Image (cartoon, rainbow, N blue to C red; front, side, top):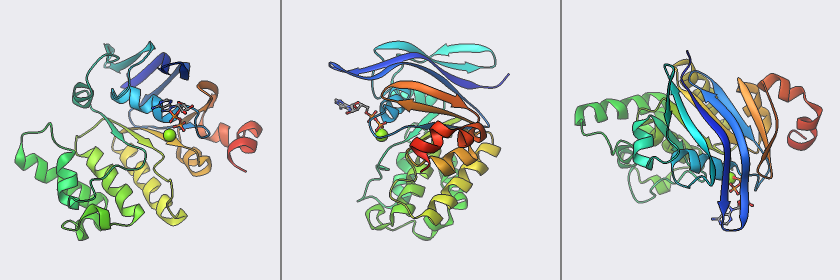
Length: 240
Ligand SMILES: Nc1ncnc2c1ncn2[C@@H]1O[C@H](COP(=O)(O)OP(=O)(O)O)[C@@H](O)[C@H]1O
Ligand SMILES: [Mg+2]
């Protein structure tokens, strides 16, 4: 039985603004799931809510593990990290005045095992050799692509089973985006469950096992990445 996160009838409001209106979707370990949608569709709100950074107005978020259902809807962000769910936020959010190494260490803040933390740092350096070269450099001096790698590495420092990525390709050159998506495929093969949010749909759909389209707070389409790539509605709205 696959381990997955199930989102059921989730609504998210900001005062009177209904940002997310009763959406349901799921993502599974060992797969890449993509959420595509235009600016303002509710993608970031959904990820923040799963990470515990925004409350759900209605609905449930369930971790389905070995046939045991753990409801996480009201858990603190730290408890969700302990449930192995991590978020790589929109805009990367690296600490510009900390070194690469110190940014990575922040990602392991729940871990008290110093030896293990150093092992995890080495793992991120192996995944992104650029980070190893720049380990003592301040994060603010890195290129956009390197900052994105650092943000991903920092999220991986919590040893997640699920990693949510909010627009990882934003503002990056196509060649860098491809390098980063190659790593997503590698991480998936290692058993991670990735939920990738993208406005830039074509590459994301190409590597997706499953994908959902979110429009003004509502899920309008879903299917395999392959099926959505061929869908004329997706092609018109997101691939042209
Ligand atoms: N802090 C906030 N206060 C009020 N409205 C917000 C806030 N954050 C987002 N929204 C609104 O919620 C909707 C969804 O936003 P968001 O989740 O950021 O979409 P996306 O990530 O798909 O661009 C938008 O209409 C946006 O204006
Ligand atoms: Mg967003």
